[in-house]
Image (cartoon, rainbow, N blue to C red):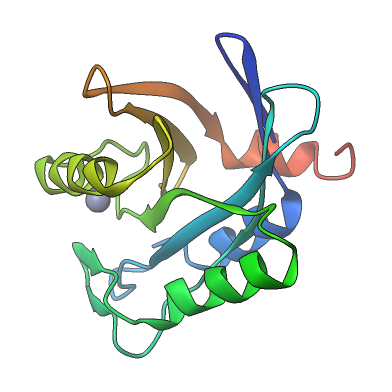
Amino acid sequence: MVVQNENRKIKICNSTLLIMKKYIQKKNRDYEAGGILIGRENAGNTNLVIEYITEPMSKDKRSRHKFLRQDIGHIDFFEKLYNENEGIYAYIGEWHTHPEKIPHYSFIDANNWRRIGKKMKSEKQYHVIVGIQEIGIWEYDMITKKIVQIDSIKWEDLLENENTD
Ligand SMILES: [Zn+2]
């Protein structure tokens, strides 16, 4: 999946999409899930590739309408990748599921993204919400403090193109 944002392309690798897909809240009893997005900037341009994500871990707080990333394992996973690859990988943002067909960010999500933005060195973070029919991606800009939706794509369209990238 590649989305275009101003002068930057953002690629979310199929391997990570397939992990997120496992957690779509299709059934009434399915809890929210989430983790962090890890990727790198392509050498020579500003394009971004999201290559790894973490999955829900035992100390995270989960319910039907809430995912709170609290397990230290998410950051440990990122730090291990970072150290083993001479720092080419970066924290890109958060992902979590919503029990709605077309995902929208909540007031709590916006506050969380702003709080994360304050702590980051990079100017922008990208956050994903996995809905039942579509997957949405938002940019948070720590300079303007604005949240802008970049794209929302139907799962069925993503899966049709599964072999192309
Ligand atoms: Zn949310």
